[in-house]
Amino acid sequence: MKSKALYKRLSKLIGKDFKYLSNSWRLIDILSDSDQVVLQKISTDQKELQFNQYGQVNRRSSETITLPISNIKDENIFSEELILLMEGRIIKSIDNF
Image 1 (cartoon, one colour):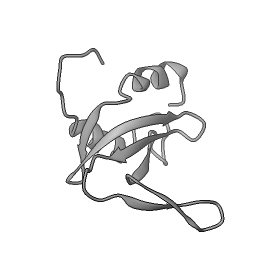
Image 2 (tube, rainbow, N blue to C red; image 1 turned 180 degrees about the vertical axis):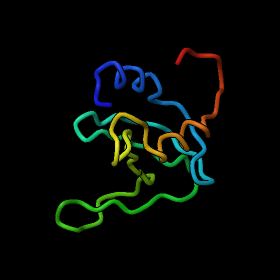
Image 3 (tube, helix red, strand yellow; image 1 turned 90 degrees about the vertical axis):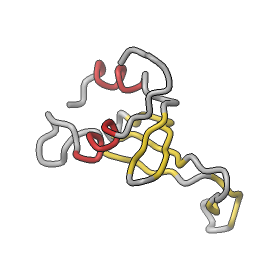
Image 4 (cartoon, helix red, strand yellow; image 1 turned 30 degrees about the vertical axis):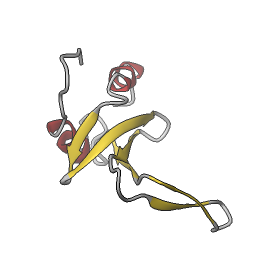
């Protein structure tokens, strides 16, 4: 499923909000090299500690997670995680995807 056309279409969703596992998330990046999307938790109250490469607390930031785009067993179909994410899309305005 690693086609440039797919990543180009998915990139149109950067900045869009989704409901995933009972939380609100914003898609912030597409990692084509590792076939993943990056989500950032939308939360105004709790920020997680972010550590630098030496294990020292650097700052507070929102939680981020990555989800696979393709299924592990068959890369020609979407992963279950991505399908769940798309089912929880929050549509704020009419856009083309």
